[in-house]
Image 1 (spheres, rainbow, N blue to C red):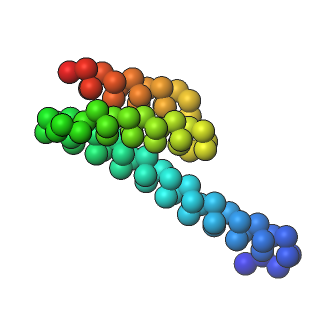
Image 2 (tube, rainbow, N blue to C red):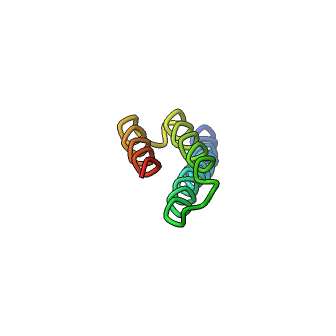
Length: 84
């Protein structure tokens, strides 16, 4: 455990950020999985889930959770799946 006050505060801040980042990353992954599952089952709301997944990818990229190339690659793959 840190002794210096600023280090103690930094630990708290880092833990808070870690929880927030983990939640946002989980939301992104869940949105992508929901779209993929709907696409395989041929659901009617696949288009809506596609839009939600693309939005989640963009949000994760803007927060710095994933890199720009990964975001572009994921979006490209989802778009190709939607076209099938």
